Picture 1 (cartoon, rainbow, N blue to C red):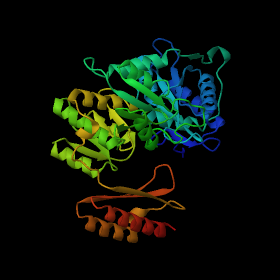
Picture 2 (cartoon, rainbow, N blue to C red):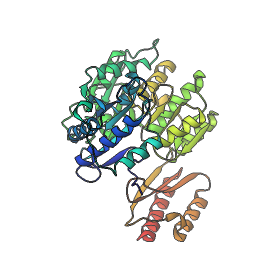
Picture 3 (cartoon, rainbow, N blue to C red):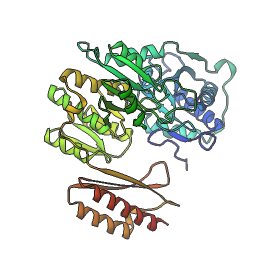
Picture 4 (cartoon, rainbow, N blue to C red):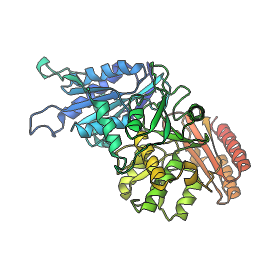
Length: 452
């Protein structure tokens, strides 16, 4: 049986450990190249497929880039290299350059020790399951390098950053600008370090950038969307109107207002949706996840905005958006998808959609969120020693029923297995912080004992 390699967000791991080793990554590149070369898209013109490789700023990206490049070329596939670029930039450039696939080397919001590989199709979305299965099957076969005359060639794209900057700007209305706004942008020493500031500056903002000195080891380190305190401090220090924080590969965003208050993905999605509803440009409804705050769902009901939940992960959000024919969805982590603007989550474009709402309505973040308080929410990750079917466990089901009865419709309980780690995640949400803490800790303890 073929081992399942592709997770919901590509292949991730600690560098130097399976599967993130140079040998495996080279074989992965070869397998992907072999599958692409066997496809019939190029036969009419007799051309070879071309794949774009992008990466973030972590030091291992150089090694993994070379390994992928070697594997693809060995399979007879041409390669374009963009250097450090946000994940959504690669999704855009694939379409703009009419390429057959793209690969991003990144571990997103993780620290530098980790890395990963994520594939995009010719339309800027994840690869079809059928193609992933074919690549996985090829991983079981040896590398047979093409003859010299059939090897792939490699070329660097010199204007990748400029192309993507112009694309981001094109998603902001031409009749508006950001003049008069001072914005602090935290790029997390990641892939957007040379992108985000230029986008906002060219739209007229007075920009202060932080987290723009990557050294290969400092990506996401006490900065960016996963460490909002750095941005909050900077906004106050520079007397800015607001702040924008991205993560290491530029697909997540969180924002801060001039008072230092932080706004997560749930709140930003709400602002975008409310503004689109008021402008009568909201297509359908909004897709959230099992982690979307209940207060936001209740507000959507008041605004008569349809709302659906799906599993955590951008893959599931995208699938449900496409199924419903809707445009807007995302997660509280700040991964927001605006399908009418891009094919994938994009931190810069999502921030621009929020800024559009603020400028068009002449409101601040706080004014858009006035009267709305997120319900207290707590998550505990319980380590499990081995695979564990918690859904059929009597003790867990008993405590779950007790918690649901106590919450009585004024809160939510979620118990789910991690898709990438040996963990059971326990989340409780309620208007009562006391109940949140009590039930989260009690359920986590029961799960810990039951799984031992």
